[in-house]
Length: 141
Image (tube, rainbow, N blue to C red; front, side, top):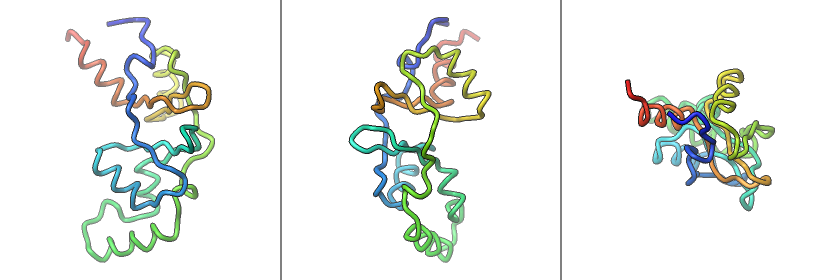
């Protein structure tokens, strides 16, 4: 296993994103369609915040199956915007940061994803899943 591994070596480079003016319905659709849990919010490539599936679940009945609850979700989604529920002052990492350093940050802060930025521009996202996939692909256990 490489000991000098950098974020840019394993981060997800093709990031699905939202804009501040996007609807929460779109956020839910992207979470489900791409099987992801974090959506960076950008404006002209500049990171403005992040919405997690958990953030959306806090204001909705996302995990329910009832038609009535689905109607409630639609009403709630119309009451709020991406900008209102996104986390604004989020921790980011540079793509030249070491995986060891970022893994320690993920553990200590109990984060599951970190946007990767270069000069305020979003260039990727590093998730715990990215780290686990790397480990599985390189582990000789």
